[in-house]
Amino acid sequence: MARPNYIELPASDIEAARTFYTRAFGWELTSFGPSYACTMTGDVDIGLQGDAAEAPRAPLPVISVDDLEAALAAVTAAGASIVRPIFAFPGGRRFQFLDPHGNELAVMQAD
Image (cartoon, rainbow, N blue to C red; front, top):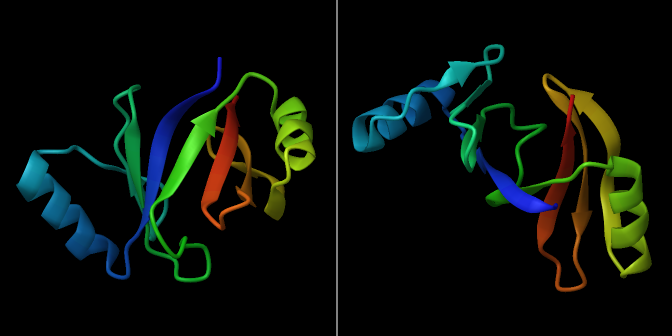
């Protein structure tokens, strides 16, 4: 079943963002390199992308699916524009698309 499981936020200063969310909400963030950190609760997690070249322009909802290729075919057939084709990241693979209203979302399949 497809469901939102992640929201990625742009973070121009990753350390300042980590400090803010830890202080504000008590979140424990796991680092994945010098420019990325995320919660790992297993529910709807939050990622902080500090690499300006990789960061989304706005919060990026991520939808979890069991079959990434089928999801790619379905969103394309429904009228989405693919903005990042399938790529691997620690923990899985994903792609990003624009819906017909210009909203950017991602779809991921965990390893």
